[in-house]
Amino acid sequence: MLHRVACGTYHFRRRVPDSIRTILNKNEIWVSLKTANRQAAQARAGLLYARVQEIFEDARTMAAGTWVQDGPEDDPYEVLLIAGPDGEPQVAQVSLSPSQLRDRIARLSESLTAGHEPGNSQALASAQAQIDRLMTIASQLAGAVSAPHAGPAAAPVPVPSVPALTGTMFAEAMAAYTEQKRGDYKNDRDIRGLEGNLALFLEICGNKPVTAYDGKSAALFIDTVRRLPASFGKGPRREGVINLAANAIAAADAREARGETIDRMGEMTVEKKVVLLKGMWEWMQPRDMVEKNIWRGFKFKTEQKTKRVDWTEENLLKLLSLPIDTKTVSRRTYAYATAIGAYTGMRLGEICHLRPYDFIKLPEGWFIMIQEHPPTKYKGQIVKFSPKTEAGERAVPVHPALAKLGLIKEVERLKAAGVQYLFPDLTPRGRDGLLTGRLQQAFSRHKILAGVTKENSFHSFRHSVSTILRNEDTSIREVWIDAVLGHHGSSKSTGATTYLHKIGPLNLIKTVKRIRYPESIDFARLFDGPGDGLGH
Image 1 (cartoon, helix red, strand yellow):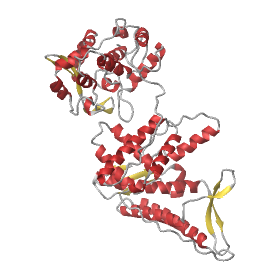
Image 2 (cartoon, rainbow, N blue to C red; image 1 turned 90 degrees about the horizontal axis):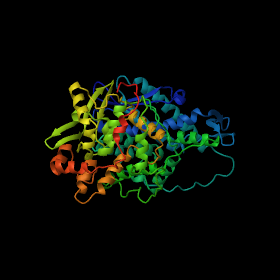
Image 3 (tube, rainbow, N blue to C red; image 1 turned 90 degrees about the vertical axis):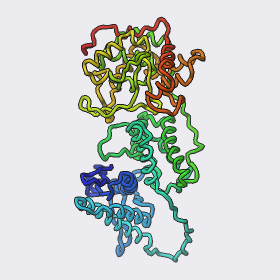
Image 4 (cartoon, rainbow, N blue to C red; image 1 turned 45 degrees about the horizontal axis):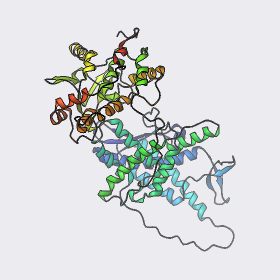
């Protein structure tokens, strides 16, 4: 949506959906935002997005109907006929009223005509043609409303004056808020999730002064999101293509009417979206942009369908007893990654992005440094890694069981060979170039084939490590456990080196050594089995 050209200025670009191109007579909207400042450009782009969206909605209604002449012969006007619920034609409400339509057009014209500069003339001319057409419709509708009718003249109905709402527009506040949060989030995927959620609110509730929203606005958003199909927003997106909530709900309703079963948004997902919006209102309150947080007081039934729990001995035995037979990843990768998860509690993403040089030897022993990686070109994609939270940057001692499995020797071999990542058979996937996809797929498949019950997943190793350590005696302090797992509870300090100096290597080593499993559990069994076809 936001593009920066060679001269440094930002431009707004949005693809026109195929279904309304004939109505708008253009393939895309491209407008200069007349600024080289990103924050100002985001604010202007947000405002323009909302106005363009209104035009798109009217255009979709127009595309679905037929324009016909109506009214008296001496003063005819056009109306738009669409199919009603009973199949009979009915007049479409292209706008709530002629005055509101004119206001929308005026605001759109204001935004678009601000971009007169070389290269934009064709796009602006096409946009102006659409404005002229809508102005004509508004005039005709206004004439229809004011046309004389037979019979006695009715007394004019007094219309109470409503004070105009003033204040910061939501799109402007949204741009400022996301720009500030950009520095708080550790990866691009989180900021995209925030931006997408705020854009969804903008679509459902419209762009208004933030003071205009109330509890009814919040309820409208929540009720609408609950009707969205569970797959909404998860599909691949092309440049300029927007997943529209109204269209997604209509399509889901139609499929349900044909007898299909459609999964709708779960309560946990709805609550997460509300939490993100509540955060924006909390940010606006001390800035005197809003008086109260409209998101307080809503309740959600957020019970997980499958509760994730610690690994049971029975399930671990099942997992370790079935030889690994997969061509997705090598047996070496699968075995070492699983063992690292079991003896450190590290997240899958942290493990998959480990580099040989993240392993360092101190006088006290070997440590894994979990830290941010600079963007690196790897197998044709840019790969970068950031810990999930600030506390996620930490130093984790290598457990003696991992050294016994040969992990340190393997690390030193890869360092000598100049290998970039600890698991070279993992391939970056998706827009973010993450290395987790193949291992996640292999683990899920192996777990199912082994008969492991649903409540245990790879993340269950993290739960197990936490439970094992917290059940230890008081000599293992809570702050040490949090430091090993990268939990926020330990402190607000950041950096793996900070943990080493503040808590001390020996205390971290003492904590990790307390991670023990029953004698029947032997992770070395993961290395056994027939060849896996990957040369390992």
